Length: 512
Ligand SMILES: *[C@@H]1O[C@H](CO)[C@@H](O)[C@H](O)[C@H]1NC(C)=O
Ligand SMILES: *[C@@H]1O[C@H](CO)[C@@H](O)[C@H](O)[C@H]1NC(C)=O
Ligand SMILES: *[C@@H]1O[C@H](CO)[C@@H](O)[C@H](O)[C@H]1NC(C)=O
Ligand SMILES: *[C@@H]1O[C@H](CO)[C@@H](O)[C@H](O)[C@H]1NC(C)=O
Ligand SMILES: *[C@@H]1O[C@H](CO)[C@@H](O)[C@H](O)[C@H]1NC(C)=O
Ligand SMILES: *[C@@H]1O[C@H](CO)[C@@H](O)[C@H](O)[C@H]1NC(C)=O
Image 1 (cartoon, protein in one colour):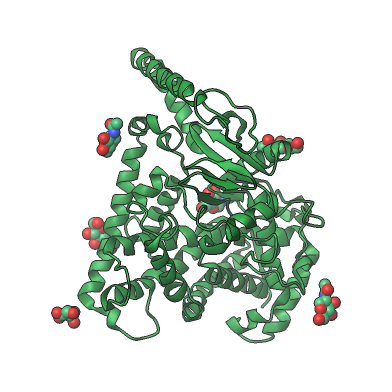
Image 2: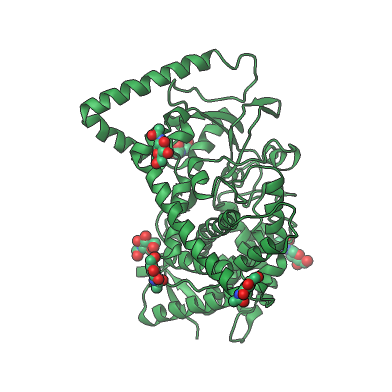
């Protein structure tokens, strides 16, 4: 909702230059009035889900605070676990019940298999020809198959273990320097760097070079920021032209242009080298995509644009989510010293006196796996988004066409009706339980679920577990300035993801 603030500021400025402001205001008010009248005469006889009272022009926008996940939970407590909001002119279906979420994931056929194609998504992902945003249909089936069977398969996750090892070793080296000088480690920054490096190497095989040019990580970061913005066009389709005035259109154009030319360069180099013919195991995602494109085994061919969009997906989907989860995990462990001791003891027992934590070790760390699950229960990184394109029914209610569906996994995973001690960090709850990340058998679906669930679960979890195991094996962790764990501020903010409000800084104490 940062964008709303920006718009508001911009609006104030326009209003100060009086004539332009006056003309614009009357235009806008006029178009709103027309629409409002038009709306009053529509939608008779349909049974929509309950809605909070809305204002004529902005709908329910005024009821949404900066912390979207909290606002939506509060509204749901009052109006119901299925609720229809209007943000501007766009209908949003808010779901805060596990049962209804699972109906959407697994039982509603194709109606909810779409994603909102916001203006930013269309600009950045080549008219949404990636996996995250592309419309449900044959092309989507094809791309999903590529992701599941080729790019993000279990085999590939194992093949990329060497990437995680190199990057984690670098990270541990840096932390060791801090432990010698007694400096705190800024985890917000460190996790952003490592998650970006891991994706960069996996996707493009080249180490992320901090010093050269404006690095791609900055580009994918600005892409992510832009995706989080709601443009005028998304909320008030008839006001799309205002996005040109706010400069958003220009910014989207520049950023997507820069990303395009960077990826074009990378692809161009590969095509000259023919490196996709290389049969070695150290193929990166780009090699695989180019190979698939050439060998003609696909039913629907993929173009260069498709390849670029899919690569960008990997960056956008695989960087911030992972970094945020890692940061929350370390924060929860520092805040809960007995859980910290327990997980450290396990990690150190399994690794023993080896000079390196191995991937196989991690598979024996039951408690560590529970820590990751419990972190993702309390701090699910994002809302789960879907969209409809046609009118449909859900739980006996009519859902209008072109509705954006937000499943508030954050609220569901803290629902006192479903979880014992919902606000507490209790990794033990996942011990001996069959709950996994697929969302099939539980009220736990941090990655979404069903056919449109995130295909990168294994890759993300492998990285999170391996990084955590290393941090806990090599170091003990303290808060700076002798602060006590119990006092650690756990406030969150909503900026596309649910992040820590205060960056986590911890002082490492080397065990060796
Ligand atoms: C939600 O409700 C709680 C308790 O009623 C209140 O403390 C909190 O400020 C509300 N949050 C938002 C974002 O409205
Ligand atoms: C930690 O890193 C984040 C992200 O790079 C930065 O915004 C923040 O200012 C840093 N905090 C401190 C205390 O250095
Ligand atoms: C930096 O960018 C320029 C222009 O895009 C390019 O010509 C140059 O090779 C780049 N330098 C490095 C070290 O990547
Ligand atoms: C907004 O800008 C884009 C490109 O910069 C242009 O194609 C479009 O026509 C503009 N829209 C309006 C309403 O001016
Ligand atoms: C790459 O492949 C093309 C045709 O597939 C061939 O013409 C070209 O010589 C190859 N380039 C190299 C460097 O092997
Ligand atoms: C999990 O199972 C093991 C043996 O299979 C048992 O010893 C342990 O107490 C169980 N833990 C919980 C939390 O139920």
